[in-house]
Image (cartoon, rainbow, N blue to C red; front, top):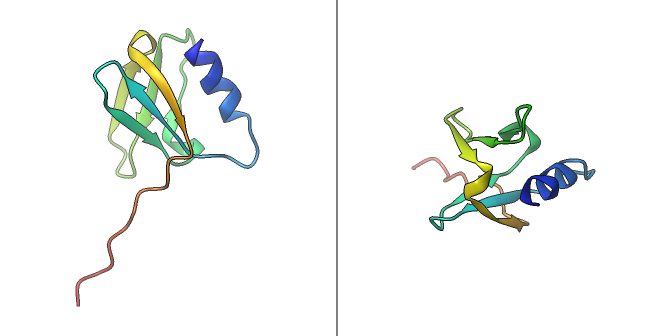
Length: 79
């Protein structure tokens, strides 16, 4: 069920940020469509951060889909 929710949410225009919550309670933000990839087979969801670091989340461990997660905050440069 959760993979279907993710696929449907990715089709929404304009894109709405979200996060994926795992069984361990951790949330993985998806601030843009460029931060997520669904490989064929629907067994994993790949989520990337702004630096390109990726994590492959097994679909069986994804327990929640949180809509409306804000984009990562960028701290201003020090003075």
